[in-house]
Image (cartoon, rainbow, N blue to C red; front, side):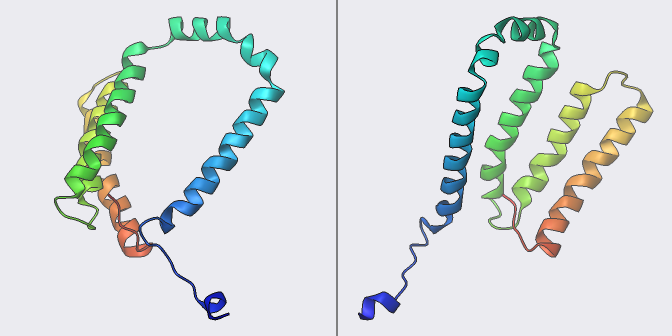
Length: 139
């Protein structure tokens, strides 16, 4: 009877409970969409082929590669100063600059200056907001 009033928490895995539940729910919802719209999904090959031919592959794959590198570097850089969010801060500035240059059509000095201002101001502002207002540390 004494065991019914005792709660033990495994802190090594307790943070995985809600992400696991959400992943299962999203998987079930995705499966329901696949079952419901299977005819439309199977017939969408021509639309995707047209879309892939017409898309800007340099920007698409460049943004994909930059995002992957950004996420891969954020944690190792953040581990240099643990629980301070410097990985986010240090990696976000060049990421925003690189994405801005990648998607900028007219690279005028004014446009580059505005993009650099956003790249230098936005990540520290977000970092401050999360750490000081929400009390959350970023990687």
